[in-house]
Length: 210
Image 1 (tube, rainbow, N blue to C red):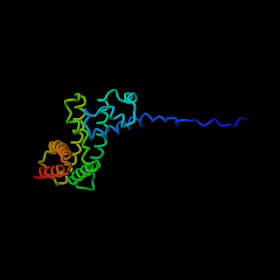
Image 2 (image 1 turned 135 degrees about the vertical axis):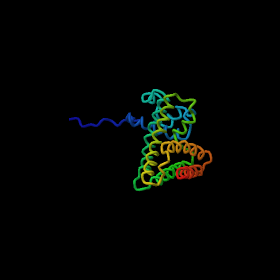
Image 3 (image 1 turned 120 degrees about the horizontal axis):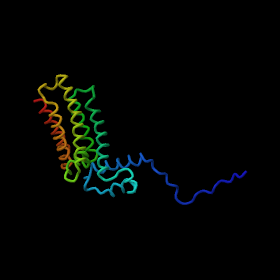
Image 4 (image 1 turned 90 degrees about the vertical axis):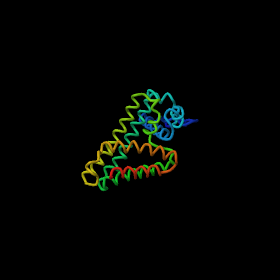
């Protein structure tokens, strides 16, 4: 019986291919990290691929174009962000309006963590509408509507608990919140300061309770 072992392979160790789902998720993760800091139009695909360590041929296996990749990034970001909103805005142990404050405080800490270099992906893309297709624009609007619904539900609960007047139009105020909040995020990036975010939060709450 031959018990001799095969000779050890010399040179580089064999490459272990990354699972398809892992590669796609890795591309999305690197894309989110990059585009929350830099613009979509200004960021070349090669920059993202180099950072991810993925060849261009593999990229097109998962995404038919850069725009398809961008929409996939919005989908992933939207899923993450709605989960975050629900964490704060549906916290039944906290009064509804305080939940909104907790969310804004968490967002401020997130921007501070990255020295105000990263912002909101959807807000960033909103600055590049001239370069985006109608499909892309529609997807961004869908994100805003979904976020508005989360705030609206929180404000409705405040009305039910008697901490917010019944006369307040919660649908319009939830839309107003995101219109102003995205502007505050952009100003915070510009000034490298949380002041625009805390100021907007304070003024929004005053408008609610006036």
